[in-house]
Image 1: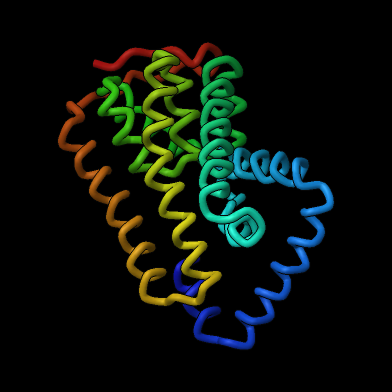
Image 2: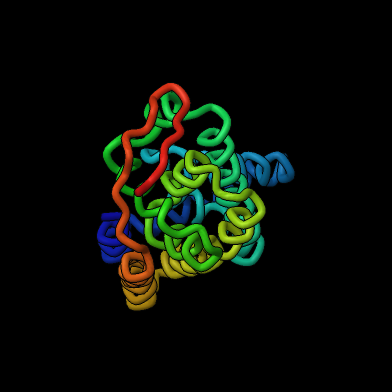
Length: 220
């Protein structure tokens, strides 16, 4: 939906020109407190990696316009990485009742069954690539995945999506429709391929009901 909206905005040249004007206004505001602007961008990116209805897509063109693509990539990756760590911490230490308030229980339980079947670095990376970032951190926190392994997988998995998001933003700012379409479709394909690869690697599991109080359970 975001890709279709972006293409529609690019095709409407007056709207795109108006948006570029708003980016220039935002740049003037951010330049007055540039360090705080970076902090706010990282925090909002982290929140977008934790809460499903928040998206950092609208922030990326602003960051590219103000700081350039590479600085935007570093800030975006850092925000998503910190958001993933925070989601892991919430899942591991605050438990299932809190997580159920943040993500859909049905989706959480499905991904949790898959995650329990594979905790290798490759398996964690594949699941990180395959499911929305706001879900994976909670899942691996709930199943108490080893922190160092999760952190390494998270750092790797966020790189291609952060790069893709930045290049999508560059294509939008520079009004390049074909690269925008190609990169958007490539990102969707990467997610689907990762999901298929994860399903092939994951052994069939039968979940035992999990205690709502402790969040503990075993798979058979």
